[in-house]
Image (cartoon, rainbow, N blue to C red; front, side, top):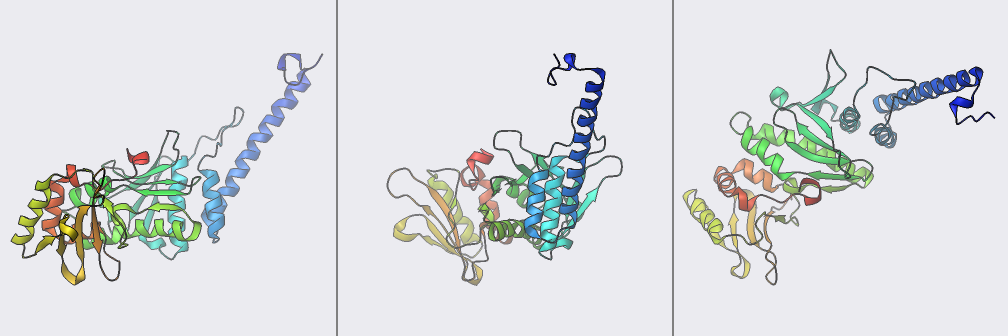
Length: 313
């Protein structure tokens, strides 16, 4: 009795037919891949762009019978998606996408930063899925992106380490600000156009943003050291509302507060930045004011802004 699911029962003709069908199925998969690549590379429709990127993010090109020796990785399609998304918002010139000569791999540079930073995506292998956008030389993962879950999370630790510490002595603050704004804009497009859940974290310029610091119960000496540093730099630190924490008024009506956001129960110390136009984030403050940067870095174990613990924990 011939059973098509049991190769041992098939005739020679039957085996050849099955082999041929498997080849055709593998080639059809390859054709589907090329159609998605065409869509990702050429489309001017943002919805089709997202659809192509989402499918390519976990596309399996090879089969048991057909393999394609020259392939980009799934992470590379995220990089192409990011570049195309910026292009569709008239910011294509803000990034440089590079394809390497001897093997299939994409990397990206932020145009203002040039070759002082090279970036790619790394696929997250845990059950979270998604990818991390990282600077290759340092390994710092600046943000997390998950197309399937429509989730985007910035990582304050990596942003601080790369831009506030590592590049501080070699890259002007304005160049850093312009470079980081490209990443903010990319996240904003995903949020505004597609309803992504985005945590801008240390880059959030909204006045309502509370930047939660690492130490829930902040040691008193941390705020005291800011009093001393502010006075040395001709800024006045005053007591916060109801004597809780402290406030410092900076230039152009920018006000920074540090206070315990939970007066009852478990403490939760936070930083806030207020300005009339809601354009200044805590990251911007660190870039502009060396004495605040020094205070923050000297007390980083206590003051580091908390990122999503489910992603960066």
